[in-house]
Length: 82
Image (cartoon, rainbow, N blue to C red; front, side, top):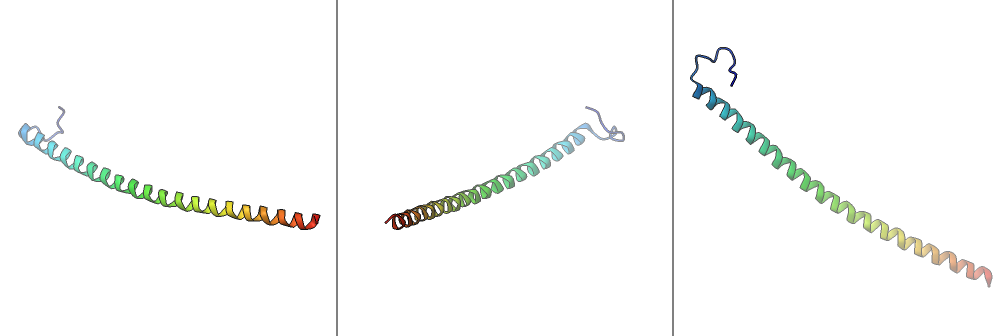
């Protein structure tokens, strides 16, 4: 292990404990960030689900309008041919 200058007079166990403390803090910060990211992913998945439902509804409405227009234009053709 390479020690920064000025730390040679500190007991090695004190330095190691400091490094362990820093690693624990880093691990806690990374765990918190992971939990926050997972919550954000969950929220985005819920939004995507809602958007897909809305898109599905819009597609259904467009299909119904297309059927109405197709029926309306075919009934006009029937009137014209009579």
